Amino acid sequence: MEYNFLSKNMTFDNLLLDRDGALAVVTINRPKVLNALNGATLAELEQAFSALQADASVRVVIVTGAGEKSFVAGADISELAAQTAASARELALRGQRVFGLIENLGKPVIAAVNGFALGGGCELAMACTIRLAADTARFGQPEVNLGLIPGYAGTQRLPRLVGKGIALELLLTGRQVKSEEAARIGLVNRVVPAADLLTEARALAAELARKPPVAMQYILDAVHRGLDSAMREGERLEATAFGLVSATDDMREGTSAFLEKRQAEFTGR
Image: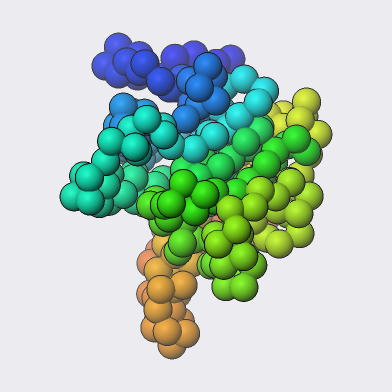
């Protein structure tokens, strides 16, 4: 059963934050403006994900958008139009910090992309661990059409996901891609019927919530840090993490359960 999470201590104007056992669901809730990201919404995302990171009972997070049309249709253009060089740089650094928090949460974050994921919305999806897309979803980085470039690490995450050539095409043309093409180029993991999107996301979240949290945290850290390192350094990171996770209660539970032919029950210790 869903219930409001930390409602006594946290209130949001632009987000919905709900809890169902080990799963938390964050919904960008500005459907009248297609869930566009403004400064206030970025601040609320940072507040929400900081709390979710600190709560060990939350093992998986789903991010989605309110309504049927849009995940996040981009940044608030009226705010962008008023930026100076200095304030725009600070805005970009702020967005990068918030999306970096999501990417490095230490627990899986599933993007359930239910419609337009453009500009900052595409960047938000890319910061998530796994991306599920409705068959009606659309992705793109159209900032070039406004005389801008992506500011929330879109120029960095997109080529890491789809390769340099495809990323440059999408960034330079601002072309939108349908969900099927997004899956083909590696931008999303899976496409599902729009009516089944949250059901599929919840099923994946339930599967991940049964996995050992410490091992998942080390996997996420090893992948993220390893991608920014030379292969040999990445191997050393992996070996250190392998040693640390081998000393956990979850490792002993997992190996014992395998040998005893029973279902493991992981505690995150």
